[in-house]
Amino acid sequence: MTEITEYQKDLIEALTNPKEAAAYLNAALEEVDRETLLLALRNVAEANSGPEQDTA
Image 1 (cartoon, helix red, strand yellow):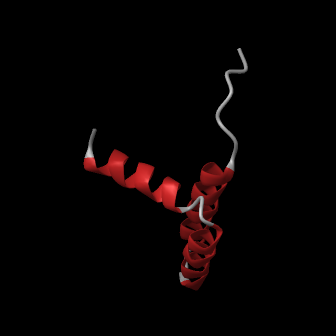
Image 2 (tube, rainbow, N blue to C red):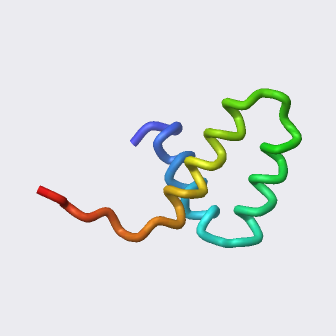
C-alpha cells in the first residue's frame, strides 16, 4: 500500500471520532479556498457513512 493510501485510511478512521471530525472541519473552514472545504466534507461523510453496500 502506498503512503497516500495509508494516510487516507488513517484519516478516515480518525474522522469517525466526532471531536476529530469537528476539529478537521473547523480547520477547513479557516482556509480560503472552497475546494479544501469540499474535500473535508467529503472525507467526513465517507468516514461516517455506513459500510459500503454492493448495489448490483
